[in-house]
Amino acid sequence: MVPTARPTAPAGDRLLAAVALALSLAVSRWPLRRQIATVRLLRGLPFARRDRLDALYTAVLSVSPSWWPGRIACMEISLATVIATALTGHQARWVLGARFLPDAAHAWAEVPEGAVGRDIGDAVDRPWMPVLAVP
Image (cartoon, rainbow, N blue to C red; front, side, top):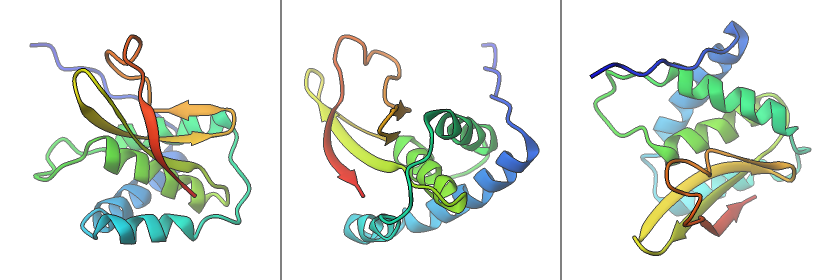
């Protein structure tokens, strides 16, 4: 099996993403209602641009440790992307969604211009439907 290449990002974005991922992993241990309430605190910030959201999402993927014994999946990565965006003084929506056939849940980050982390794998023929968007 050939290992997949990790995405690369500028050093400043990687540092920001590492802090955001650490915060995301800490917050992800809380009940979901507290996680949502925490993200809602970012409501007054202006929305980030789509290209900046893409860069921060790539940075979060690049600093995700492979040695971590717990879960780092779409929910933690999208929350870290929203937190990293907030650390730059902007906001992004944290979206929790689902789809049918097969039943599955997914999380991603989005701004009015578009989303990152939503269309992964086989999402082309079975799109994700947003269930909750925060803030």
